[in-house]
Length: 179
Image (cartoon, rainbow, N blue to C red):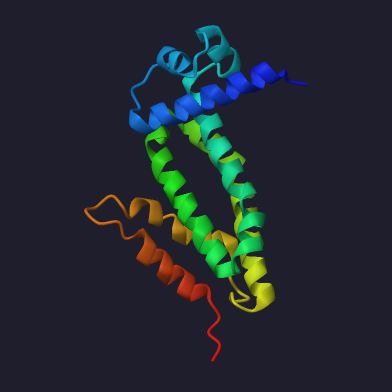
């Protein structure tokens, strides 16, 4: 069992690192420790390398996103829940895009292995809810949806963010069109 102060330290480190990396990828581990209000030893006990910290930030964000699915489905139609969830995913991936530079090829592989399954399961849950109520096509596949939406977090690199209209096109393609 992890002590409560250790959990709090870990949470503070993750929060400080998340914010610091969003502002600049050039921040040192010692600066992150200072921002979190912990000593370097505490930081390195929790995250022995910069890559371990980056991987933990990714995992924490994916866990948070995956955990929102039941509440979204409780309050929204499946298509609207999928729209909201995907918008949050795109936003998170854009914020984390710069973190990717801090990962080695094996780090990229690790994050893919650790997050792909939970993300596919979340998308499947959203799609299945829409299939069950007849609003989403029966042939919709979570893997295809994830591949299509992968373009969305790169769509804001130009002068205009095109991700919302692009997501609209993807969702229109998923919807059953009753008359």
